[in-house]
Length: 156
Image (cartoon, rainbow, N blue to C red; front, side, top):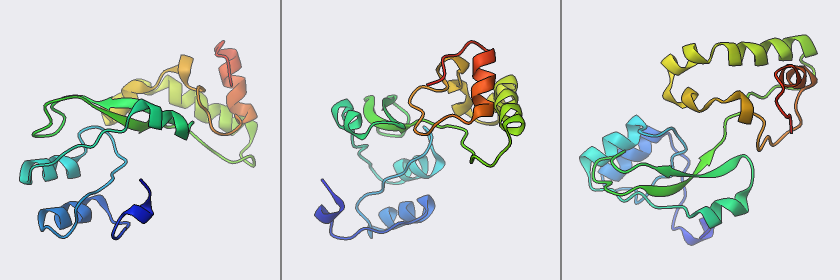
């Protein structure tokens, strides 16, 4: 399926697409967000929804930073089964004009403060120093690489 297969494509904020579906003015929405995102919870409590699966074979064709994942059963009202999906791996990215010392400090700070990040957002539970560079879509900044090297993490 491609955009050409659709009658009309609009790029809308999450909440706006949900309101249009509730009003029967939109048939579907694609939302790249964390599990249990409020906009989709709102939609699923308002009208019956079908969470469409994205099979792992399809995800594999996309490559990094995408990975196969799953929306656990019960994440949204009416969603009785787990649904295969595509996930996006989050990376801390900067540009090459940032000094090595600053990039090192940012990387170090991220990993030394994961507990604080976890209290701010559940997605931070997925932060793992040992796998942090897997699937990295761009070269590591030399400052970040220095931190990973010091921690004994194989930097891809």
